[in-house]
Length: 293
Ligand code: AMP
Image (tube, rainbow, N blue to C red):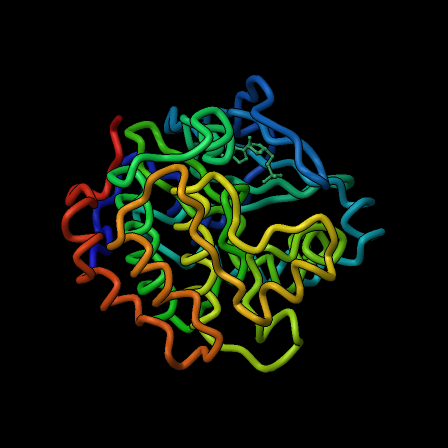
């Protein structure tokens, strides 16, 4: 399992200050640049930390909106989780600060932006690209599960791409507690496993299911249980109504892997370390873990 122990000297500076120094971050520590995007609770900007010159993404959240949605408590907990994770395929959270009206999250900058935009552009990915992403995600999830952290919300919208083409899991752990759950409730059920749509107990194997959904979507361009009505998606998930269209053409090995992940009985899903040994991954995934086109 690849756990990065390397820290860029500038990253070290950013994170050291966040972790321990007496001095607290303020907005004056940053030169704030152009907006990178907009989320439910505020904007994300590119920014430069003045002392180190390190480029980061600054997520600016409105306290009023956080309060109105009653997610402040969860925000605190999730910041706590994400700031302790160190893995090349997990977006770093270096620290946070706040003023009277806003909360600021200092995040690793993912230069190539959102994965789902690439997927929309390409419609679907090659087997090489899909397998490289799936194996990178499996390694990141093995790392998380080892720390008793379950993501529960693996989907293209929560994946960003770094400067070298490396995949980064973002929005860590929000699914059950906060924003994404709301999104899930009002939006798509597509990535949830049977035990979660049926509100049963669940464990880390929910992430194996979601990774199976994602693998399917990478290869076919759509999640497997998509339907017009929520109730149909619900039924298709609980019955594991899985079909493989004839177009685009996808190898039998890829379908075999997906079928071993999308298993209703959570205890029978292919464990992630075995996924890494599956012939489709071995034959297709770039060993560097980076898809560079
Ligand atoms: P979010 O509030 O997390 O949904 O972020 C809103 C948008 O900002 C995303 O859809 C991305 O386009 C962009 N964004 C968020 N975080 C980053 C980041 N760390 N690096 C680059 N772009 C980001």
